[in-house]
Length: 184
Ligand SMILES: [Zn+2]
Ligand SMILES: [Zn+2]
Image (cartoon, rainbow, N blue to C red):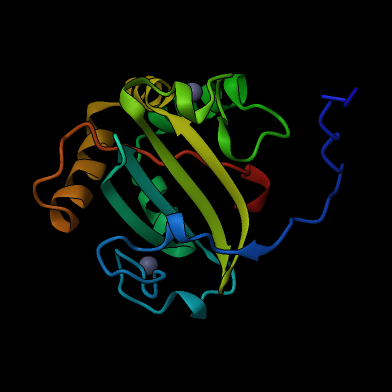
């Protein structure tokens, strides 16, 4: 009889480095992301790394971007104080300790196969050619996070979306979640 119990995840403090998986490569450029979507600088030049976000629906890429940490911080800083506080509270309440990778939502027990409309976001925190952390967020959690945003904060992200991705639906992830707050 085989033992179905999965091995417990190693309780490691060191972030695990792995090559950036192809699913987080740029679909539109057909290669790994090389520059920041917002400032255009080369991603490998950022010592603090960068974050890749891709949203999928029924197997299609809705939106994708890579933000260097200074740009990500700048985008987050533009949020209103109230939005920042509410988002932080939301994440604190729902963040699932020890859950990373793309199989399960970082904020609820749904698996990637259980995401409504096959819609979810994938996030990877990267340094150079390596990914050091990753997360999947299901559409329900993305929508719940969007609801914590003020109008003003949504407009910041809407503007970013319109400037970079004309024509994508307006339910674009308004505020990318932080898969590992300790890394940012
Ligand atoms: Zn940038
Ligand atoms: Zn979820």
